[in-house]
Length: 428
Image (cartoon, rainbow, N blue to C red; front, side, top):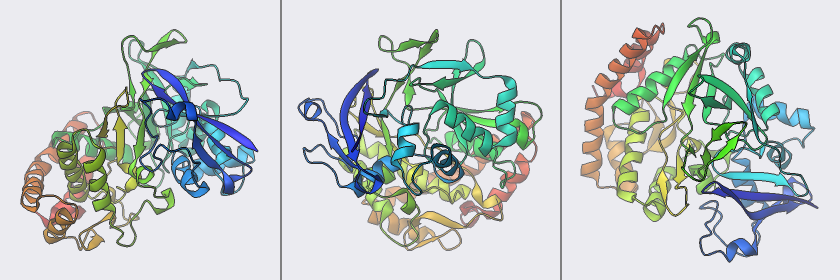
């Protein structure tokens, strides 16, 4: 039987909280340690895994821990390299569990704690990441044993602002930024995402600090999007020095699919299943500021509709825990892209709004129905929608103008396409 130790960072200290045990993927079960359960400050690592003595069923275990792993090409390649079980997750989790999203760490029983460190990454390697996309990012993930959930090619890097230099974290060293390359199928997606994030920020929606890394020209194969991790913070007195550098602490987080016990395979609401109402109900129950967080979530949902982001699924919304883990808040918005500018992209939203999920069928009546179903005051929710609609176009134009001044070609065209094809077109 294999045993994997699960630890959670709190105020800079890793605490052993439980184990995953089993003979194969199909019978792996998570259990909290009794010593952790006896700790009056103990918290569940997920809203879907409340504190209890009994072990969790293999499927419940899989849904949460599988949700920490990359998807698509990256996962397939990692599985091939480690000769992992086809369709399995535990081998990949063991390989990538040293540095995950949030504050968790997973190591196999008996495995020595990896030595943390930072390795300077050359400009050539950064340029290679921009040029080669998924292949280069997968190579970095394999080298650093770092796990980032999602299907797009992305890596975690450490940025030293004093040196203006990027580093590869290895062992258990935390990263400071998530870095994405352009997707070969989607022209100009880096500038598109940065424009979308800036527009959201100008509309009053919290987003990670993001910027474009240039290595060469301004075309897709020379630029990367770097987003500062909101689940990594510097705290005086608890941070560590790694390779001579001040390393950040980890904050625990989980996405809404994990929190609601929904598999990553079901992150898109293809049939009406009440995802939105479940999300709002969760915030009402656990948020340290439920009124503000429900307002922000509503604005995020409306904004995704306005900009035509049809990839805003359950895993693109998260809960963020404070350093002492005593409070939970809605995390900043992330992975916002005006996907409707691409012909090959679907026009079906990832979540149902009212009775519809097609961008072309959703109406204001659907939003009013959704607000009621989610337990919101319909009048105030629709007023917030109207206010956001009024702020949206000026914010989008300002964000596009800023990027044009920074000499990113095609942004003006993308802005016009969002105005023609996004949800905003029905509300102008």
